Image (cartoon, rainbow, N blue to C red; front, side, top):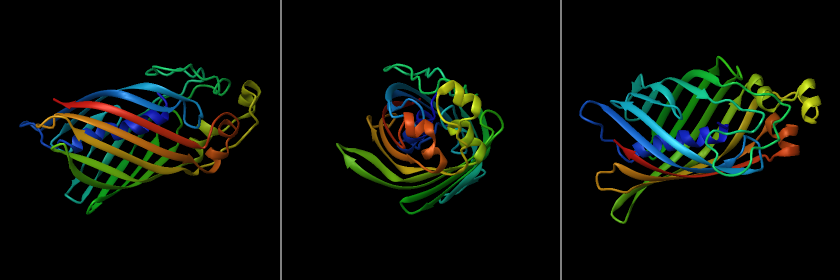
Length: 270
């Protein structure tokens, strides 16, 4: 599954629960959903495809959470203003044949041929969220123990508000975000060694770490039932690849620095 989809799915997986905080009597809460995403074929591409968005998230007592999209985490610190704890995420593989499990439109890209497959990456780290009134500051740092074997840090600030629309409390959120990565991460996805250059036709390129991307994301969560079990979630994001990732020949010759995403998800809390 491509990185762009995973980034958006993380937002979609959490969003329905923001519209429905009431937990079941035993503390467990399960939310399932499905929708569609319009996003680049791979991170850095200028061709876009529609993909299906299956989603399932499990939470317990507002402390434990688990999903393929949002990872597995535990809020060791869980106060009204501060939440923090360990987290593990799975970053799916990138296949050089351009195939995508959930793609429903468009053809598999040839841009990655000769660059080799990137295995799935299991990332371990920690997260923190700090609320300042309507603004939530977020930070997450993870080290991969397989796949790209690199370090990733995600930073965000989100302004949230609610408004009554057709008798329902609709939640809006918007804010900037940025990603920093290590040399290993950037080299894996955007570097080109001599063997890859000969096979792909791209020039040799050594990609270093640093500021990987920055942009802005927004979401709208609209409950569709009085008990808030059903919700419609819309998301949009615009990010720009920066540093060595943005200067990579894969991006400059075959893709684009600007990355746009648009998604819509229907969810139900069980």
